[in-house]
Length: 258
Image (cartoon, rainbow, N blue to C red; front, side):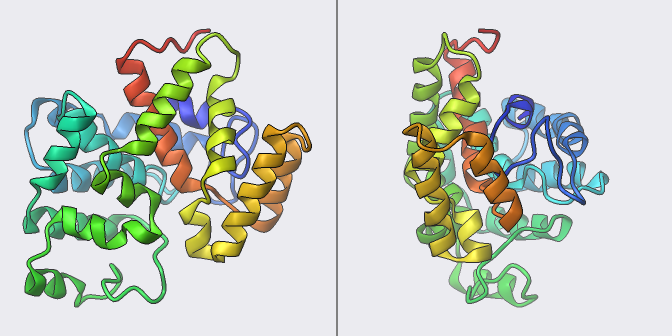
């Protein structure tokens, strides 16, 4: 989490060179520190996926920077609980209705972008009643959201982009600014659903196209960064996947000091 937010340049996202008006680099670094007790419990499997996501979210709501790592918690908690990606995916499949309800409770402690037409809108007080009526597990909620959410898709499809990101990091092992290079490659290949939820699919595809131009050497990353910042385009979903990929890569021997 610390490596991701400190990397530069990651177009549109907070990094060591720029903040947002209400959220700063320091908020992300504080979040890294605050969430540790929940991660330690996850490693020991002292809790469930839902309770631990909720605890991590509550712990990191003590700062005033808003949502910093909610998507990362959704990905990291199962990965920490499992020894492998395969085991993490199985842990998600075995989640319960209680996990889904705890996950929805976590939203009360953060501000997360949702689709306006979502019938299971987390801002709707009746949403939890609907979860109970349908007996939906945390896995079911992620499956419901996956067509429109990259992070949710990771949990129901076996963490494919997490695996891809880790492999890219290992491939770029010897290069400087490997995190930035990998992030730009992800941004050039996958429209970011966080942008799509706020500005529509056309905007997320436009960012992807421009990121592809950066990778092809037809535009600089700083130009893309300026474009994203001017328009408020924040590729937060891919930032979360960058974090989960970093976690897996570090566990497999990727060395950040190169």
